[in-house]
Image (cartoon, rainbow, N blue to C red; front, top):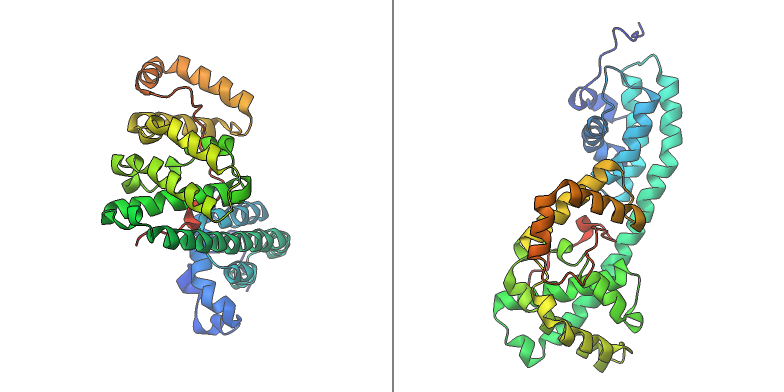
Length: 319
């Protein structure tokens, strides 16, 4: 007998994944079925769409959010809709046809989005390999080779973070690097891409040295036409670079960013960002006073966090 809406009961992933049902799925679908069901149910709760029974609206919202919540290969996303279709069929849901239509409509975007992400990841890995080769070459230099182990790790982190922001974040190859873009990334997203344990004075003290070494190396490779202006900029901003991270400032801008996201402010709309920031400072006078008392280089406009590539794609820079 078919279940009615009042008697239908959702199956847990374990209840659904019996040997008999698994046999009806392809090898790829079997491989990811357990993770898919677990992730989808979690995503359903995350978007606040959980209910007694699935609806087409829930399916659409859940699958739209799924790629932002999980880090899985492309084949995982290919298997999502077939696995969910089998899952809904097993429950004999009364609105199965509506759910199948929602699944069918969601599949192209779901698969395409992740295909694009996979392409981006492959391109990013190419950049990582390129920068790693630069690092290997620079480590042969005496002033780099003689660094203590911890300082060498800081050096590697600075070089990778800077180069990846310029190439992957700003989409600029070294021949197009300029002072304006360098200033934007160093006094913008640079510190946000560092792991918390890397946000220490010892690392920031090495920023001018690491940038100078990187730019000088690229100049010897004939890859950095604007190398001298970049070196001059580093020399002229030495103090600002070694002091650009301040926990109090970072805490303030983290709170400001969160408040903007809560209000739905588009971080790319500079007019709205400036207006919101001014209003936020007026409503938080204590934070405002501390901000201007703490910031030692207010001439550099602080950017709301706009990371141009996903942090989850980045690998640890441990040597």
